[in-house]
Picture 1 (cartoon, protein in one colour):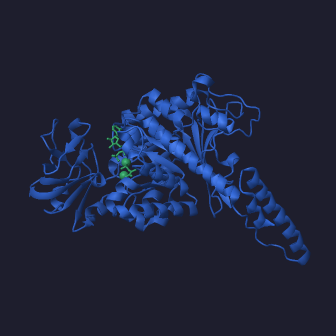
Picture 2 (cartoon, rainbow, N blue to C red):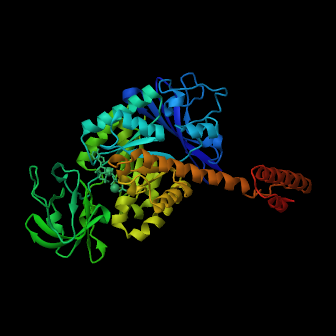
Picture 3 (tube, rainbow, N blue to C red):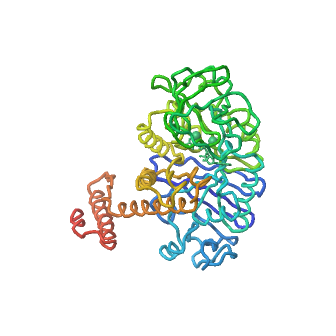
Length: 513
Ligand SMILES: Nc1ncnc2c1ncn2[C@@H]1O[C@H](COP(=O)(O)OP(=O)(O)O)[C@@H](O)[C@H]1O
Ligand SMILES: C=C(OP(=O)(O)O)C(=O)O
Ligand SMILES: [K+]
Ligand SMILES: [Mg+2]
């Protein structure tokens, strides 16, 4: 048994448009959840329905035109005209399309079969209307805004642009708001976009507040207990170990640290400290998952009608349940899907109940890799993805999928293998972070995600065609079992025949004769 979870974004001008996240599961579907988007009276539906995820007619995202006929976004290629948002089709009910390239249009006959959804973190590199449109054309399904960065006015501007893109150009891009969470992190570097820490340099980590500019080699820390909690000899990991320091001296609110692994410091990067090879987490465990600032951001998200709220550093199911009832009481026309970010040891400990309580989960590998040994991250990813599939929850694989593309136009082969693996595991969505927020090649990175996803998905379909059908025996009498054998043989031969027409070696048919 398999089924699909559909993400619909319907707009008054062109409704309903839907995005489908589909995946097989041994479990029966759970029903549907309708979420309103107030400003544009757009609605968002998470709906489960019976469908095979390898069935092209069921698994592809759908954009449907005003009159209900299937259509394709004309803005995807110059050839199809940018102003006319929807093209008509002969068979209105069966055409299912996504944003597609011209090549895909030709190859698939106006049908995109991509089931893996693509999420882009929006930042300075992609917040312009045209940049957002370029991402939508490349296949962005969800725009993510990270409340760790930027002001609410900035995020509102991005939300308005995405809504305008949907209304004017016919896209169906959803909005995901990601909470800051109350983990320990650095300040904003006094306005600098980054700072380089070199091997052997001494930096001052302090809880004192400064007016910009900051004194040289100074990092402010958001957590008052920081200087108290660290000890001389502790390792201080920035952004999950991208830069590493050793604590060498404590002077009141200042902590002097020696850079032992050089690298680029980014504003508001996360900080973790390790003692004797173990993460120090006593204080972290006491911090609330949703801080008072996060609650204000959540109110903002509800007022703006975001489609998803991703909760950072979830520790238990309780916080998800609390947030869901909070949203239910406040969101006017419905609901907002709550995504649990799995990025801490606590979330791994309470994984099943957290996923059960959530509408979906994110494997947030960036911070997860700072909390557990790096070599454990791939197996945890696999476990989370599998569990989400069993529990019928969509799952996002996030962080560093194409990290090198922040600077370079092509990915490393290892990155391509990582993306392929996430799709092969049947992750429902892949997410770009720095690659799209502040990288030099956001569109190219998205193209890599799209093409790799399509390639792996095509492979499943080919494999599926070759699969030997296992048909359970259900006959209760001798004559029924004869009928059953005949039917089973016919089904197997039909399947084998399909293999031949698809180029499979005819010898494979022998198995069925
Ligand atoms: N709204 C924003 N304004 C400015 N910079 C941003 C914004 N969103 C993201 N960025 C930049 O992109 C980087 C990667 O984004 P993301 O992964 O969402 O954040 P983080 O690295 O804090 O987890 C951030 O470190 C930050 O430098
Ligand atoms: C997605 C993640 O969270 P954020 O980018 O908000 O730190 C992560 O840690 O992998
Ligand atoms: K965040
Ligand atoms: Mg994180």
